[in-house]
Length: 91
Image (tube, rainbow, N blue to C red; front, top):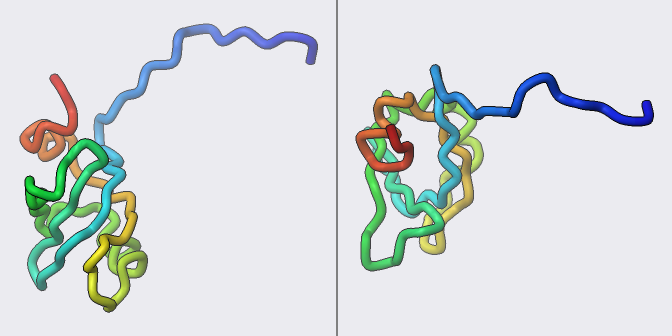
């Protein structure tokens, strides 16, 4: 292949899920507290209920059962409506 041209400009769409790249800093039986790259330690993060995490089992494996003092990196898949509500995704 000498050259390849895309038919359309690529447009990201988050119709069913939104990937949130974050650090998990706290967890409970009902939710996890996450911090995104733009947040400062003084913001204390955002709580996301386990029931709204579409890849909850994968996230549980990523963060493990250890203390989350420094935060564990994770990709949390959440519904687009929740991403909009929390301010991660604009209209």
